[in-house]
Image (cartoon, rainbow, N blue to C red):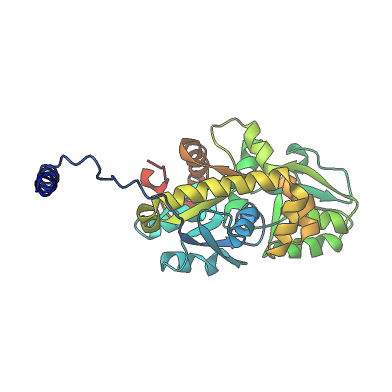
Length: 333
């Protein structure tokens, strides 16, 4: 009887403690660790996509937090509609295109990072007449990218270094770099503005071709508070707002991927070839000159704003008619 009474008393105490919130055995659930998200990425053939190959390879091996699906195209025009329609989440594209998309979509996109700095080089084949900007006076320059970043960057630098783009040089614009290479093959002497990896391709064809100067180095020498940025990572604003942990993990994994390819050029070049971005042999020679980076946060904002301003001052259409607002730049909270 005493045992029964003792048992009943114990039950009464337990129920009383539970009712009063006084149980010392209740477990508090721990925060659930982020397990990753599938992110659909679009990129172009060339340096804009080279920095992500290690991340893509690790994703296929199940070694990344997020999983990544990659779509590559020869033109940004093939990718941007897919981003705006929600079929892709992140793009690696010419950086000023991000501003154009932002201004034409009521802020539907944001910039995550600068991922490629300058990849444009002045080259000379079959001569030794060009050594600096002054020696370009009177020359014909073969180039691609009329109405886009290459034209704006070239005109800006010509002006900054004392030349008039309209009268001191003749620029013959071609539709793609392969046309320039063909033009150079047909002439004993030629001067061109070529991007990597086509500089490397041309060097393989023309032993007498030399690299005169890189536009990125020449831009930096001006010390104007900006840097020459070729490409950036653009994200759908809605995706970034709904998936901050996935975006944070992506930026960490992308940064590690760019570090890998810069420090392990031969192995990185093999991955570039495997993903069909550029032939591996060409990539191995070109990677050191592609200025592959991952610059985020306030540093990204400062360098990009200065660069955008130089483009805007030449032609507002290069920015989509106006400079993007502060919310164009994605800054993790």
